[in-house]
Image (tube, rainbow, N blue to C red; front, side, top):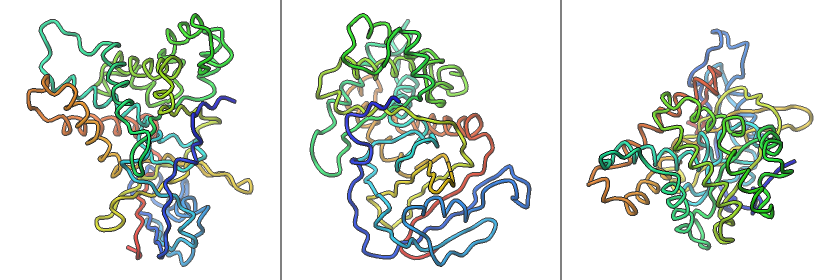
Length: 354
């Protein structure tokens, strides 16, 4: 089993003591299931999935809506959107996540795609180079504070076991994420990590294989993936400690997607984390998990970062609106290509039922 993580995934959750009652409301957003919904999960099923570790009681439900109280809300991890890494929406994760398609690395790529669209490129320019992307990623990681509550300290990318096995065989190494490999082995790994068959994140692989659909150069995606691996294998220890590389296990068995939304006026600086894959007492349940409200905060951070570093090339043109446009396009493609018409649900956490 591969799992490269310089810190425990679970140790990164910010402590958040809930001394009040907490309600969970689930609403069906869309579905390709027949009208009677007999072929897919109901909102009550999704509520039970989210509340697997905290318990649910006093649940009210129908075919489109379910709401109830969390029995032990203190068991639900919360994090500050500006102080926690973004995992991929991949439903195979068995830890509580704050999700966006592709995770941190994908949002970084979105910012680079937007930058290339907004800036006035020099005559003959073909866009950012691999060295440009690596330098920007290194700068971003170096700007992340090592200490301090509520500050983002980790940067995430993931793959899966099957892709890692293929990469290891192709490069002739037992563990492609082993920073103690000799230089020649590292060079072989880095020459192959961004090939589609070695990308275990389906969202990132789709971006490489279908660049027109994602309105982003495939080479730019490959540069970012290679830069992450390069810094993980060869970067300074202080930079390596900021990288969080997760290798997913198992198969995709997602029943739908859960979108976790913020409610104005309720807990504005924290967001609840949700476990995508749970399997208690031989009762498996797996969903994609997406946090569209939380990711808006991260995109503003990335827009500010790029504007500070390369703002002269933008000539005053705002970057964030283009990032949001590109990001929404990526989400639309993911719904078509990865979620593939499975039902989507909106999750709201409030002090009182909606």
